[in-house]
Image (cartoon, rainbow, N blue to C red; front, side):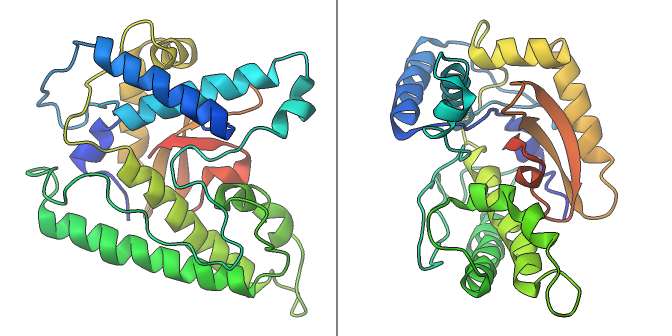
Length: 272
């Protein structure tokens, strides 16, 4: 499916999740301060207008902390040991491939009329749950999944696994299943986390998110146009993503087919 419900596209969040537990805590503190100081919230009737949520702002701040660590005198290699690619909670590691569906962070009917209660309940409790269950099975069948990496990190190394042919000459079936269902799990974890009953219509002026968007796209309006066009022109089933390149720190908009994850390209999805 193409995840283009109006409320979803209005939930323009952002940012990159490179972080360490302490960095996440610091980012949330900054995000709370930003919410308290911002008086710019307003209602919007434009169905494809991006609306940055509080959780996305927190992820942006986390990303900035992570990039600062990578630019520190320690160097990228040393900083990497304290950085994770997970932007949206939960970021825990399950050794027994027993991941569960994160609870919806708002009431099922709170996004009406854009997304009704029945649609939200089915999408979260059945659709998202289905990807999670099948991902757990794929992980249990895969060799080397020893509970030392997050799902995000495992997905980022998947291309190497897929390039290794199995006895039949084709990639291992469990790795292919993880590509599909692990991607569905990660995409939907981000999807539900970046919506809110009380969205912010645009980033707070001068915030890390606003600065990053201006640097990468030129302006907020230019970003909105690029993201909207990308979502509207996905061919068949797939996603349009706002992603962060953890190496360059740049933001970009990309398209991916089916449930393929940007993590497979070394990119961190912030919005989709």
